Length: 155
Image 1 (cartoon, one colour):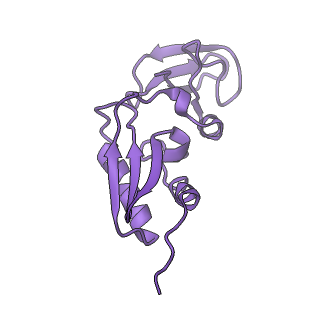
Image 2: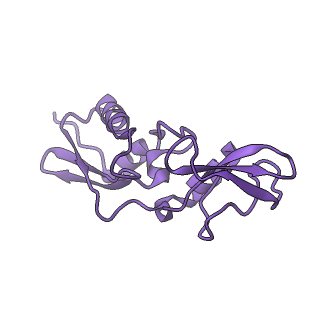
């Protein structure tokens, strides 16, 4: 007897458990880089848009997706890279934004800087450097609690 293939909803749920390798507190789904999941005949096709075209974590992300889906019995899998439209921080889920803040990373804001310190919630913050631990983050500091923190840049 042939085992029925998993639903797209089930597969999205599996992918929601795959953490981003650079910010493991959020999943690839929360990050918004999984753009589509569909069956094409017997192949599962997962469309991925990296946060930027030269993202060094792309290979690890693809390997993590393959590993998670093969572990759950997906035999035939194709990953497609989609660069247009380009990824934007608008694609971060609300849950992902909350997870970033709880982790100590200020989520992106349309005004171009954090509204408050993710640790003490003080609005008294200053930018230390436009460049952070990854290309999509900047380094900020709270002038109240004096703690540095990452800010996830708007892209």
